[in-house]
Length: 158
Image (tube, rainbow, N blue to C red):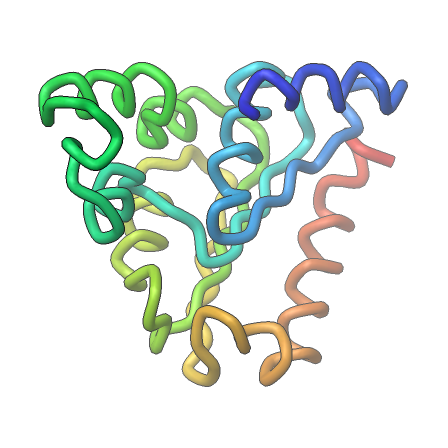
């Protein structure tokens, strides 16, 4: 599915300099992959995103469940899902949104992504909500933050 990111951008007809990639939860993998393919993109918004995909994979499966050894799984994740490397190389603006009470993806993932990202960057940790209710219980603050972010990208993306 990572290969689809380039196809989607090309099919959109929008110049990468005008694109803000947005990824929520698992979708953060694809959004950050987009920024690694298009480092000239205007922005990146990550909601409840993953800093360490291997950590999340190992919560769900054992390597043997997919016919792999731990070393092979680690190598594949490092090759294709190195979120640290992807976000460190992105030079556009970054907004990271997360709930302190996220019960699926710990808030430490957001803190790591923020630490690795380049300026300009913003981290917004919501005190209310969890992984699946972050937007519903923070509607106004959430959309205000996104609107400010998009406006701040306006020189590049509008």
